[in-house]
Image (cartoon, rainbow, N blue to C red; front, side):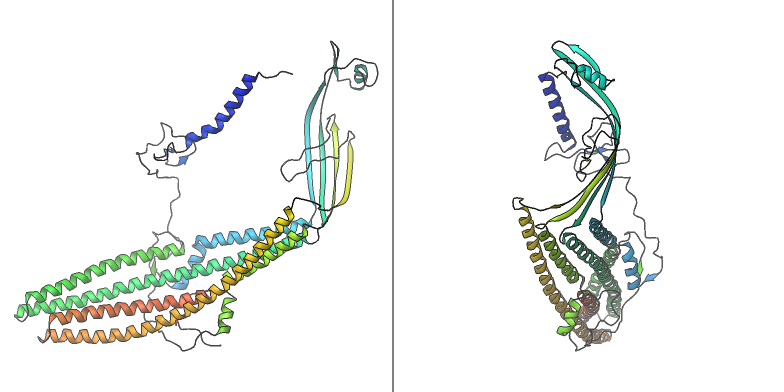
Length: 542
């Protein structure tokens, strides 16, 4: 046997070590210097160190623009010029929002996990085909006549090569062949572990299906909030345009009085100042409309450059009822909330995992065996397993065919406390799941009551804002009429105009806040399965 010199073996070892540490060259060189990526011609960052022919980057922390990324195109199902209602936008969002697809994939994975848990009741069959070549050499020993000596080996194996050496013989033999095996493993009885595991997987699947519904409800709620927020911003623009016209009317009256010799340049200046302020507010409000449009498209999951128009939801009738949520209604709503149902399913799954952990202390009954067919002259005692889940095949012989079937029972005796620790972990997780369920139910009650109070407050504020706007409108009309007739002062007109603008904006904000509060109550009660009703009043007592 040829052996490598020690220094050569050490050099190979150091070379292999250096190959692993060479990867550090692809990392940032220092903590305070920019990383230089290896960039392709299209701007894509590729593995490896930066090369001289790669895309030149300016020094700094700006990364290259990857032109290989697909462009985000506008949604093809959005019709230009069509004013979309809230239900239509929700329908688009449920298909376009990425969160619903992720929740769908999670639910499908949980269903597959249930199927995999059920498969443990079935036997496992493994077919293996191994072919190879082996070579053996025995050095030393004295030549002798017989089956155990060199001549005996020569008689038994014509392919052997016998070479007489000083002090003994050298026996070489080689062969090739193939082994075909079919293995069986079947767990017959395990005192309920698989049943508990399947029940835990089924409860986990229920939880993911519930969370899939929760994802859709959240999308409905998010789109609803964005829709009403955008509607409020659009209404603010319309109200500020009306305020701008009112300011223009006051300015025209001031300029007319100055031209008639009844007013002063101070009055005109104040009127122009009020007009400029309304212009500034209008520009800011128009920017707010653009921002809320982007927020709405983001909530829907469509491209921000998609042209989108929405319906006007102004002037819906809002009413305030005296009916309040009863304890029975709150309990009903809590029991249908997705987060509560998911927490309940998770708690049941944790209980099943405790039962599965307890079954590890009990025996298991199993059947195992294999069938093997050997060809050629391989000197093979077993077929090694491939992978962590594959066991070696031990039932082999020099015969062409062999078979084996065994049945047995395994009884766990001692494992250093591993099973006890796993059982304790499962019990702790079950206790935490029960605690989470109680906390989720308490938080649900709080959210429902808070949402109901918020809706009532919003409706009351809207009613009060309506009375305030009527009074402010009357005051402004009277002040402007008096000023035009030469009896009032420009200061009174400005004050009345500002009060009217504030009251109008307050009423509009209260109106849309009531719509949002109605959506929040529907979401809190687990009833966000469609757009909120046109009349956002508290639910009637059943």
